[in-house]
Image 1 (cartoon, helix red, strand yellow):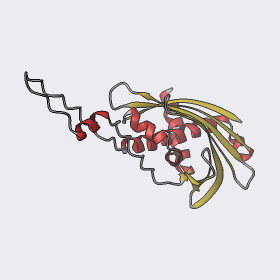
Image 2 (tube, one colour):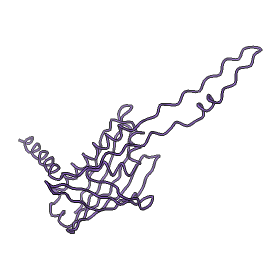
Image 3 (tube, helix red, strand yellow):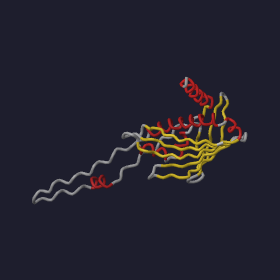
Image 4 (cartoon, helix red, strand yellow):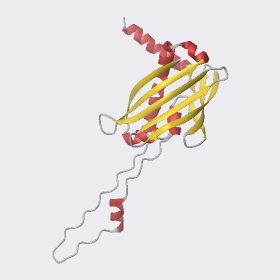
Amino acid sequence: MEVKLDKRYPVDASVEQAWTVLSDIRAVATCMPGAQITEQVDDTHYKGTVKTKIGPASMQFNGDIEVLGLDAPTRSLQMLGKGADRGGSSASMKLSATVEPGESPGHSVLVGQATVTVSGKLAQFGSRLLVPVSDAMLAQFAEHFRVAAAAVTVPAAPPAAVASAPTVTGETAPAATAPQVAAATSPAPAPAPAPAPQPTELNALALMWTVFKGWLAGLLGRR
C-alpha cells in the first residue's frame, strides 16, 4: 500500500538556519519521532533504529537510510528510509524536502513530498488510518525541525571594510592595515552546526490519540 503526501511547514528561522539542519542527515533523522542513526556506512548510506512504545511495551525496528541527493544551491534533500520488523511488516518512505524563503526576513518554509509504502500487517490498517498517522508523524517531524533550526547559531556579519581616508593634497593616504584587508576579503563564516534533538520513542498510543482527536474534530465540524 502506498500513500503520497505534499506538505508545507512554516519555520521561525532563517533559510540559512533551516538549511543547516536539512543538510545534516543525522539531525534530519533525529527530528523524526523515534528515529536515530546508529552507523554511517559511507557518504550516502546509514543504518538506524526506530523505537516505538505502545503502552508499557517498547519495540525497536532496524532500518537503512540512503541519501539520494543533497544540493546546496537549491537547498534540497532527497532520501529513502526503509525498515522491517520481525513480524514480517515493512515500511519505506521516500522524502524530498526543500527550504524556501518565508514571507518575512528571518523566516523560511520547509516544503516536503513524501511517499510512504507499507506491507504486511501495517497494510491491513488501510489508507484511512495510514494517511492520518503519516500526517501526524510528519507534523511531529516539522515541530522538531523548527526547534532545531531556531537553535542554530548564526554568526554576526563580518565588519564592513574601512573606507580609506580622503587624500589630502601633498599627503599620502594611510594604507589599510592587515586586519582591515582581512575583514574586507574574508568570506562570511558559515552557521554553526545544528544541535541534534535528543532521540525519543515514538509513542504509538499518543499518535493514535492525536489522529482520533483530528477525526472527531472533523466530524463535529461537519454538523
